[in-house]
Image 1 (cartoon, helix red, strand yellow):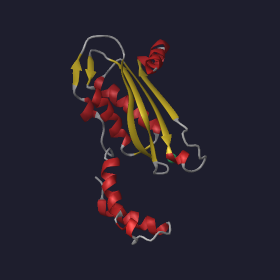
Image 2: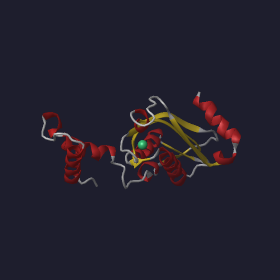
Image 3: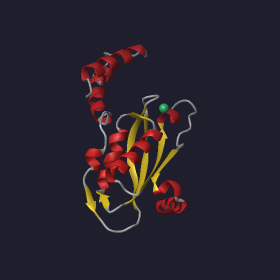
Image 4: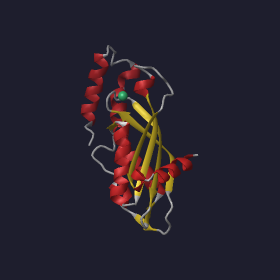
Length: 184
Ligand code: ZN
């Protein structure tokens, strides 16, 4: 649960601390705007994706199921600025599949919190393994981190890639190769 009054207080203090005039027109409602926004962009705190991944369907077939280019937006927990990009999820069903939109929901659940990309990638893979119990999962994420683009090394457009393999994908290089082939 977001404590809206506390967020507003904190934002006001923060603006003062960086030398801003909190009463000027453009900033007067900023604490309120931010506390509202927090309900959405940090709405995943304390949640896990099982509510989205619980409903599965029986299905035959042995192939790989892939969902490509799932957009996501998250916030870097080291700097509290956004990182955003795309997720690629593949799994090998063991008799059951999941609604494709649910994979996007799972990504969203773990993205909407202060996060690091490595952990986000692993949490999505583990949640799919746990709930759907497929033979294997592979999750790749590519994202631009504004803490790298707008400060520090200042390299806009640089992408950070993370990859997590679980189950059969872990040891089977041919399966991993199929994943990358399906990306094209
Ligand atoms: Zn950062």
